[in-house]
Length: 509
Image (tube, rainbow, N blue to C red; front, top):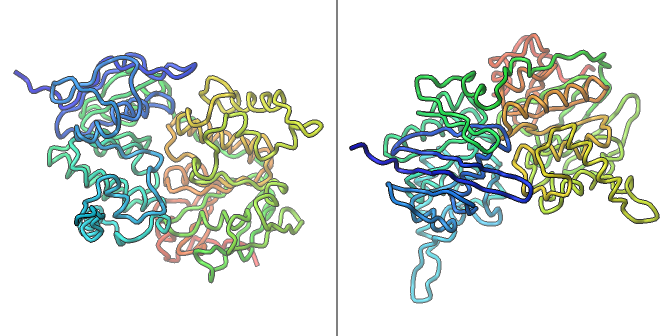
């Protein structure tokens, strides 16, 4: 008689107002198996895993662990069953240190007053950090860590639970190549020790590398499964979207105006002693590559007036402009789509309509009152243009998938006709189909005369989408590569601070 699966989910259904998120979905995972769960944004992957993790309650279906039916009423129930969930959107408290986050809610106590045994917490946390290769102290506050390091803390927390099943939702979306390699190695170690991993990722190369089996969802339903021997990029995409993605990369047809945007003496609070300068052409997509911590996001914030300790000299066309605040940048048509879309790009409890029109409310007022009909018209146009999956513009953004939330952030700025659009990790956690739409939008903006600055840690994205690539290392630009010279090897050489012959200076003069 064959062994029962460690986990089975049978006929799971979940409905939200106006949306059927899951329709009779089934999933099974064996002991020590790495199951990749793939699908476009809005396919139901995160919803299914939130049901397994006790965040949501299903409207139908059953869950079995070790062949026995279980009821997972909350996150604590899931933890007791040995299920740990590493969320795509980080679930950390950045005012606490690393150890406090790892053992949050499970703190060991000491003495008659049952005080938290901080010495033990820190001692118990250190081995998990070493296992992950995370070179930070357990006493470091989370707000002092990069997004990638915070994500590794989440993984350390899951390891500390001694989980039997670990759900990883886009775990490498903010990790460097080295951190990603260490995580994939760790997944192999977990598999060997009998721990099962459910791995959600849009980086299909990682799926091919680590998965024993792939399950694909499409529109809230099972689309099919792929066994180990048949796993390939094309097979996965075929089940996800049913179309070829070779046409997703869009070539430039714009007439470029070199030096339209000039940045000089840009400084960030992270690297206050280093000045950054570069030129970008009107009609081009200038990619920014570099390792995590190179200072790319910080320079973007300095340009748009979000870094109080930073600063920069900005010229658009022949006009020198002064940017002291984000409002100044917005009035000049210089917009930033931040890396942390939930924390910095959206007000998630507000509706799609409210988020899209928030930066430009004066456009929708009459006699001091907001004209919601005008707001709805703009929001509906962006929903249609960006193919945002939502019941309507009055849906709260918190109820949308990560990819559709990102599209709302884009829609907010696209409705305001940008001159310069800075996109920081624009497709982080977004599926191949949605990526293609965003790439097309970026190219259309450039072709219509905007300057696009794209910060990305996805090497494939940098190589395929950029007209030129500026590479940063420790707070300064080490060189700029023309498209013909954009190779992974050249970018990595510059990213680690080495000089190469075919790299050009960031600006003339």
